[in-house]
Length: 313
Image (cartoon, rainbow, N blue to C red):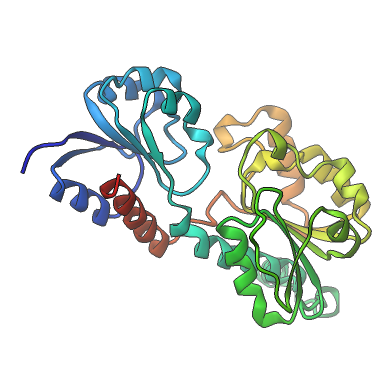
């Protein structure tokens, strides 16, 4: 077999990916916890790199790898790659949202049920010696209207999980014109019906200019009902100060947040740490550390998806 060159594995992957690359003639250099500052030296003679959120393939790192031919992204979120510059350099790039969309859909549903049925908060009360029933009377999903904004991979996965709950699903995606409607899923051409009818709003959008602070004070004020917000996309999609406003006024009845505007904690400024401390302690809020797409199965599926795309490049 003719050697194809080195590949830097800068993210946790399943052996199906490294073994598959090795069978294709690649030499895998595994550095899952590599720091941005140390990556340029390792990339100097690489033809490929696998990244997640730890390593940002910016212009500087791309220039540090003159032989780079392709970049693989575990998961979605192509903001970690300067895709415009990569294309100028004829470097291919692949993501693998097909691999973790089911995990995200399941996780979003789990958080939603926990918030509306007071599962997490009542569990903590029992641990503290409190047995409060009436105070924890929750709401059912049946009959509610769920607005899903963004319908690429995780949006449909979440909708699939909801279908057994007899809910109404409103879908809006400004970039997709081919979304099929059904008795339970109605496609919206704008946000008007979601503003008017939604009891729950779930965000499944990529991070780009038009999704920065998508959930802002105006969005919250435009909602006719108090609603539950779910964000499993990117933290900066939600304006955190507007989120606090919504929670304090009751416009946001609950929040399920797997992402934060600045993350992880060592990258938060003092204001954002203060907001996290204040919001995460509210009983109607669940904040988790960006783990919606993190499952044992997703690691395997994302790795397999990337291997397939690289092999067919």
